[in-house]
Image (tube, rainbow, N blue to C red; front, side, top):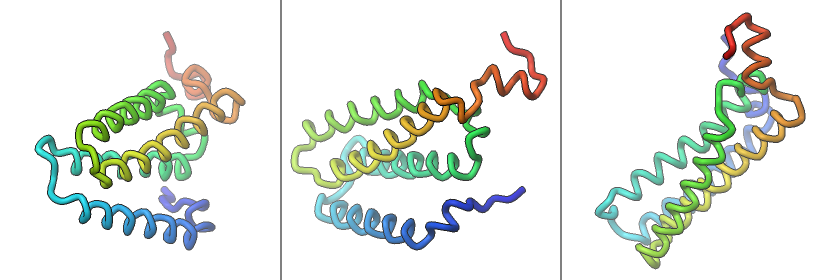
Length: 141
């Protein structure tokens, strides 16, 4: 199985520059904010950012046919949930630039993923779960 992503290969330099800027922006705001919050928000948001970025990487790697494995509803609900939680964190931990920065980064990647996935499903570029199941001889209820 080929695990390389042609899109990443073609845009590697841009990808590295963008991620490096995001990394240094994140590290700066992390250091300026102080220690971890009592509820572990720094760790949670850092992991959430990694997951959101990985969704986009998987989308590029698996292509449109692989997206049937993912739920559009889950993509939108993850984005909405993270946005609402970020709003709470910004209110509760006022002046915490790291939580705000990472929340915005997560939101951008989540909305990108949800919009692209919805667009491809609605325009027929990606198969629906029923189309995928029928094409692979799987039972559909």
